[in-house]
Length: 220
Image (cartoon, rainbow, N blue to C red; front, top):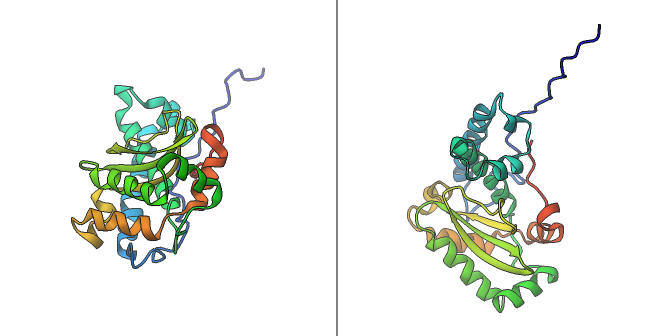
């Protein structure tokens, strides 16, 4: 007699994706030492803790984005949410930067920056103010929403995933992102990234894909 037991769902653990560039590629603006600790210690810890928390639970079969979206607002899932957010946010952050970043965005996104902020310099000022002004730990984001580009800041590990917005770029302003290189000079770190490391190709890809089809940091 054939078994009526359902086949178990194959679950693949969420793994730490490789960096999109070598650990020393962002020097002199972000050191190899900082990347080694930030990626190798902090990001890895979020991934490992998330896998520990979701083991044997429905979230173990979800995509990373779905874990974030479906645990928001659920008090019993707060630890899962926080570690999922930080796992996703960090992968998005690494991809938001590249060595010898683009000094100016390509035409597709430059036109939206012009119409949304009044020019590239105005965007840079607003993005820097959001990053520097975020009290305590958090993130600054460039997002697309309602046909316009906007700059927002979020506390702790919060991100735009549960909203209708499309994240285009992000900047990590947790102290571990910059303290080894800049100590308490968050403003200098923010300026260094904005002026030298922004990956506008990544932002353009995200804008083209839109909220439902955007480029997603890999789960594994």
